[in-house]
Amino acid sequence: GATGCGADGPGGEVSGELLRSTARLPEPFQVPLPVPPVAEPVRTRGGADVHEVEQRAASQEILPGLKTEVWGYDGRFPGPTFVGRSGHELRLRVRNALAVPTSTHLHGGVQKPEFDGHPTDLVLPSRFPDPRKGHSGKHHGKHSMVKPSEWTVSRAHKEYLYPLEQPATTLWYHDHRMDFSAPQVWRGLAGMFLIHDDEESGLPLPEDARDIPLMICDRAFEEDGSFRYPSLDPSLTEEPGVREKYMEGVTGDVILVNGAPWPELEVSAERYRFRILNASNARRYRLALDPGPREGAAFVQVGSDSGLLGAPRSHEALPVSPAERFDVVVDFGAFPVGSTVRLVNTLGSGGTRDVMRFRVARRPKRGGGAPRVPRRLADFRRLRAEQAVTERQFDFRQQQVDGVPMWTVNGKPYDPGSPLASPRLDTVERWRFTSDFHHPVHVHLAHFQVLARSGKSPLATDVGWKDTVDVRPFEVVDVLVRFSGYRGRYMFHCHNLEHEDMAMMADFRVV
Ligand code: C2O
Ligand code: CU
Image (cartoon, rainbow, N blue to C red):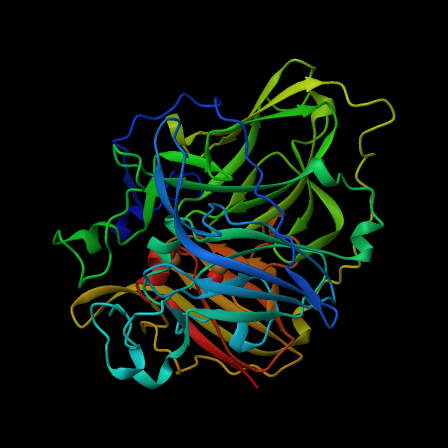
């Protein structure tokens, strides 16, 4: 139970119950790192790029020699990478060819509420009971009570409009179906989404083949290669007690990067930019290089969740909680040609310590290689505490609700349509998050800056604009949130996906 969280402080291994694979696992560093394909628009309409993607089941070789059924965007895990330009609208037509409802959320994106991928805003398969007609329970889950009037439904497909009126950044998209995000993301419904802008293009950062997304997540596999995941829907549960057992979250014993187990990437001895995303359901990482570089820092951070920093920050290690992104430059020129460098998770042990390996295979081409990261990056303004017009406190905690343990916000399990806050558009508020456990708190629409952790200065890795912050056990995290973009109903929640599915979510309404 959550009593383990004291020991599982910043130095502890996992929050969550470890699922062990029964499949034969490969030796690490045997599989080359895959890079998801960049999606091509099907057409351009009125200046907007129109993309189409189909959610479907497909068979993918993740563990060498075995087939895994994935539920993927275009049948891939990870899905294709969408690349947009700041200020240019991107329309994403999602077709749901799965057997289950979906909702697609662009995480970190600034879009109108109806395109935000709210959990109650479903794309139903063509034959699936309509939850507005009173079919709740078995098909639609019952961890959270959803009034029939709260559902919004599209049949088979939906077009999401993303204005991308936001600066260059590393986003991701993933499933957000009410009560079922954890199993559906575990099966593969996640991908990267990058935004570029002119300010970024003017900077000499590594690009193209040297700008690589690293979507890191853990999974467990059955003997036949299929994903292993315990059912968490009480109406579908075979084993009694499964819910309590996995209350803290589900973690696996296989670390995947871009969908490959402990892969290897051949690099030349020069700078690379990595868009690191923790797409795990519940696992936190503390990433480091082993060995470290002969000189300079392991990671030069250039961007956070929601954009480029004002100036680069050097780190020897990166704590990354679920849904956080780190945009970093690694200089392989600081390693001998012919050597190998491991990306390790210092919170893990054995198989969960290794993440991937880089093989420094060659010198860079003459005259090639990105120069040192410039001292100034983007126009970043720090918010000041005095700018906050309101202060609100949200407590993330496990609590009994009708005799059942639930993850709650301010003592309440998620109740869609009952917002816990109504911030005004174009204002800054101070939000204080408190917790009983590790809760990576994510706010939709609005981006924030971390002001303090338990009254002390934030972590070095808390810099920049963020949309997700790990609130550690018994910590008090103060953030300054800027509400801009659109009015309407959005949400914030814990991004431990099992906590999220066990109702640790709340709506807010921008007025
Ligand atoms: Cu990445 Cu509401 O989630
Ligand atoms: Cu949580």
